[in-house]
Length: 365
Image (cartoon, rainbow, N blue to C red; front, side, top):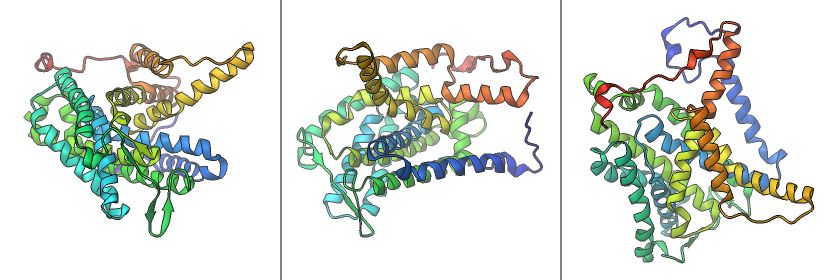
C-alpha cells in the first residue's frame, strides 16, 4: 500500500501530487523526445499524428470534459485554424507569429459562436455546433479567393529561426515542433485547472445552478471556455494542415468532429490523460487494422480485401463497449487498477459505483 501524506496546503494545488509522479512524467517525456532515435520515419510520423490529435483532444476537453458543453462542431475550428495559419504565412507573416495568431483568431471566432450558444444546453448545443461544422464546408468553398475553394491549399515547409521544418523533408524537426506545442499546451492546461477559472469550469459542468449560487458568472465562464477550447483546437488544425501538406473543404468534415468527441469519451472525459489515451486509439487504429488485415490475409492464404467503413465500425464498437462497461474511459479504468493496488487488501468492489450526477434542478436541461 502506497499513501501520500499531505504536510501543507500547497500540495492540493500542485501540478503533481509528489516527486514520484513528476519523475514518471519526466521519464515519459524523455522517452517520447528521443523517439527519432528508436523509430523509423513512418512510425515517427504516426507518433506525430497522435500528438496532433492529442492537442485537438485537449482543446475539446476544455469545453466538453471540464465545462460540460457538448460540441460536435470542432472540425470547423480545426479548419479555421488551419486556413488562418496558411493565409498568414502566405501573406509573409513569420511562422512563429502566424501560428500563435492563428490560435488567437480561432479563439475569437469561438467567442462569436459562444454568444448565441450560451442559452443552449445538451442536445440542442450539440445540434447547433454540428450545423456549424456542416456550414463551414460551404464557407470554405464560397471564400475561394482566400481558401482556394475545392482545389484547396498546399503548405510546404516553414522556416523557423533559419531552419526548415517540413513534414516530409525534415520529419524529425517537425516532430519536435509538435512535441513542443503539446508540452506547452499541456502545462497551460494543468495550470488552468489549478486556477479559479478552471475550478469555475468544473463547477459549471457539475451544476450551473449551484455554480451560480456560489457566485460564478455562468455566461462569462462559458464564453471563456469556448474561446480557450477553440484557440487550442485552432493550433491543432494548423498542425494538421502542416502534417497533411495539402487540404481542402473535405479535409475537415463533420465526421472529424464526431471522431474527436468519441476520442475523448474513450480516453476518459474530464482528464488530461484521457485526451492522450484517446489520441493513441484514434491515431494507431488505422495502422493496426491495416497490419491485421495483411496478417490474417497471409495466414489464411488469401488476398486482403478493403472493407469500406471498417475503421469507423471498429471505432464505434469500441465506443459502445466503453459506454456500457467503462463509462469513465481508459483513464477511469487505470484509476481503478491503480486504486486496487494502493488499497489492497482493503479495496471494495462498489467503491466506484456510479452515482446520479445531476440535481433535480438540472433534469430538464
